[in-house]
Length: 128
Image 1 (tube, helix red, strand yellow):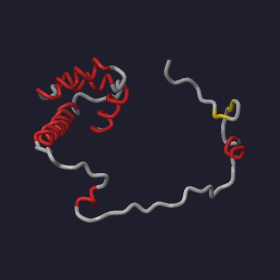
Image 2 (cartoon, helix red, strand yellow):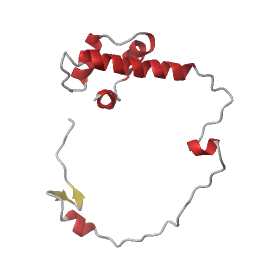
Image 3 (spheres, helix red, strand yellow):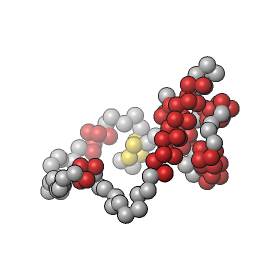
Image 4 (cartoon, helix red, strand yellow):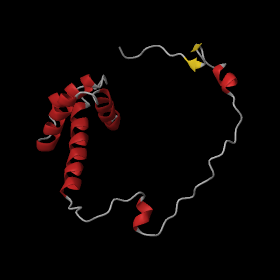
């Protein structure tokens, strides 16, 4: 529930820079209040009962405390890793040839579509 709330809020408002500026300030310098939890749940359109709010508040604040601890670690001079195993042993990627192994089944797949248009799946508009 906790992560679902976070992902829903950040995904929903990823295009709103002012929202993220506000969130960053709140999360960086202070802990979330119960009012913040209710506001986030409203923005994410997730029903959070008032009795659940203190537990979610504690969990979110714990996550942000961990993030702050991670941000405090000095990573100057440390190379980014493409994979965690690369830190302890030499690693080579197993690659395969890029060849077509299946036949074209577009018509069979389109048969599953409730609606189609010009050979593409037709879905109702979600965002306006």
